[in-house]
Image (tube, rainbow, N blue to C red):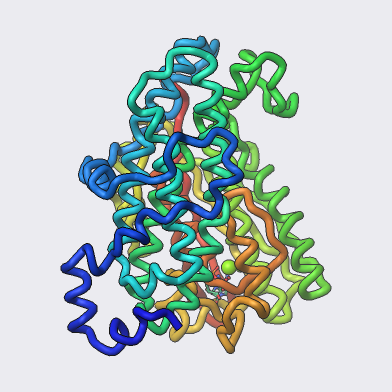
Length: 451
Ligand code: ADP
Ligand code: MG
């Protein structure tokens, strides 16, 4: 048992005292501990530590509200070398502040929670990433050599943080005696929403770097438009939700076959030809999670012969998206209230709503209030720690684009999908018809065309 656990756990007074006294609450030897992953960084900085006051100074700077224009302004074809350097410097101006905010937020957790090996691993990853980027911050990137090294550091950074979600999930499961689920949900919601933006910034520059290389357009021919590709970095300006639904549907039905021995089917109706500008990995994550829920309910209620009906509705061309973020969705929820909504390219770009309708029996009134909490699930009655059935689920939630073979189990599907949808000003609403089935409305705020 950790030496700090007994006094911290047994007395709220001590816990409070610790929170007020940073030096005791957060021993500096812990803050300076080097990351365990340091050996695998190909371009290590001169130092792997960051002074506490440097973290505080960076974390006191406000977070830049990311706009879509931010993401694409350096990436419009043809991509010049100057635009690539500008993208690198812009990325560098944002990431250290964002990482420092995460370090501070982890430091504000009770010490006993951050002492958990999984959570301290994430803390050290953030601190290490920050220390890796800081040497670049003092100089402007203005030659190809620096840009290549910087992009390589970014790629390592993205890789280092790829297991953040399952690791945090495991850590919070292990710490659930010491922190209540409301606090965990609050922390995770903020952390995971911020992480969406941080990854987007890093991945956008990496994608622009790759697209600037000759003969690097690896997109399928169907994805190429007149100027070579429908992509600007990680954004597909002509993403067809119907094709994402079909590929995710195939993937989820395979998981279903593995788990239950049956493959429910799905039908797409409405306007399947609709396209919009969106980040494909975000949509893939959301659709996969919503289909897993619909397929599971359908099979477990014994109605696997009933197809899941997915209706795609494009908003009329003249609907103004700019103001819709502040409007209720008709089901009592307001879209885009959290996260970092991204401003549209064009005020009039229409959104797309996708309704996933299953005949899986719906959600009981006792379960319904909990479905948006991180780690709430009805999958495992025993709510066992990882090591049993939840292991697959942990591996399945490594982030957008991650793959796994579990149908359910950790209770991250709905809240994390909603965080992704809201990031761009959309949302998710669940309407349960208990005894019959569920309608899940996914609204994507079309990102429009680049101005
Ligand atoms: P998980 O799938 O890992 O349990 P989710 O966040 O995806 O976590 O869902 C939380 C809970 O919401 C599920 O365990 C299930 O009880 C309920 N739920 C979600 N979608 C549906 C659905 N379409 N039909 C019935 N219950 C659902
Ligand atoms: Mg789920």
